[in-house]
Image 1 (cartoon, rainbow, N blue to C red):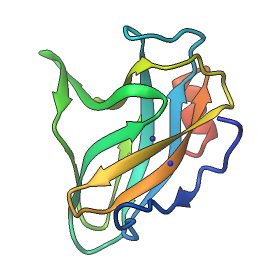
Image 2 (cartoon, rainbow, N blue to C red; image 1 turned 45 degrees about the vertical axis):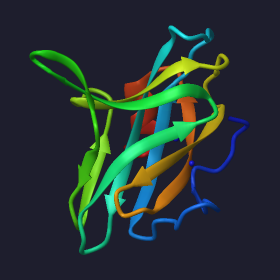
Image 3 (cartoon, one colour; image 1 turned 90 degrees about the vertical axis):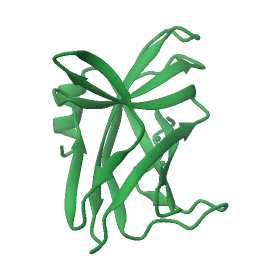
Image 4 (cartoon, rainbow, N blue to C red; image 1 turned 90 degrees about the horizontal axis):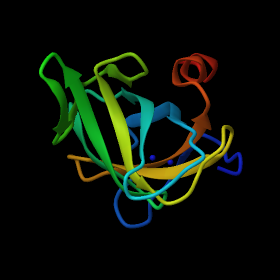
Length: 148
């Protein structure tokens, strides 16, 4: 999916079945000028599970960072989630200001607003989706502008 103004639509992943039940959009991340092993960048995405069967987001990967984690913030602090439940027939927003976000850790280059990176989302069902995430200067404004 997880910069040269690629469309934010879905693309098939050749190694595993693509998810026809889950759709993605909007998908954004905070643009940063720096990169390196200690740089962490927040990402946000809407996942729509149009099927009658629940699924789980099990992981995210991209060539843009060493790893991508699902984080949840609560009164005790920030925690890595092993998965994110996607109820049947429901929309799940990982949005700015919410308790959950994606964290790109160890970015491999700086990213400007408007640039996109492809990220692959893997699901418990065995399916995966590739999605273009667009860099934004301000996460809340970028989310709103992208239709979130």
